Image (cartoon, rainbow, N blue to C red; front, top):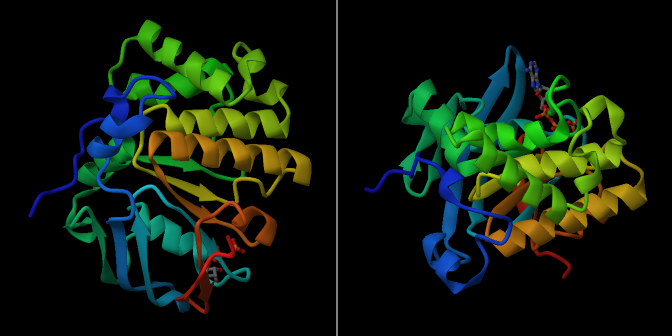
Length: 255
Ligand SMILES: Nc1ncnc2c1ncn2[C@@H]1O[C@H](COP(=O)(O)OP(=O)(O)OP(=O)(O)O)[C@@H](O)[C@H]1O
């Protein structure tokens, strides 16, 4: 069995790097199973968060994970991303079982293959927005000039060039989320995990973030796992899965 590539997607270049037939070949066949969760159970003390959740993320798709508050959506996302270890069940990424990897291997996998967008607090307040976007590349040992050049391209792609020299505390919520999306995409990840990415935004700014996030993911061939409780946000997905009481149920997407 071939293991996941834990080296960098950081070798990818600019925002358009993943587009086109060549990149599609690098990224596997669209629609193939990329990330598979099988019968996940996870409790926090006496609270069962997941009680037999199963899910497949296919290459290049935007998958919405819906469900009521406390149903287990974030825990499922964290298990899929190798942040939380399930008590039982497996998470297969390109056929390799994440639950058997060491913390160090998981961390390399997350850095090289995954991108993250959360609701709040993901940008480093002391760094400028440009430095924030360049940071994942710097962690992959890309030189400062090259990292900042690529970060600037991504800020442009996310229509937020004007905040490059500002710190996160000096920009609006919508601008900050677009910077966070740029940072999630800059390394050329194969999967983007987005947990309520528009939860703190009004509908206009939320729609803009979703349009740019899903547009950029489609251009680069990245899959998106999108946790939301809003139908308006889920409308950007190709497919929906509902979590209830720690279990999953598939729905066909409306579109
Ligand atoms: N770190 C933790 N410690 C204790 N309990 C937790 C922890 N994380 C999750 N839980 C509990 O597990 C259950 C599922 O939580 P989870 O955050 O996965 O649900 P969710 O569907 O994402 O909820 P929300 O939509 O409100 O964010 C809840 O009862 C929650 O209180």
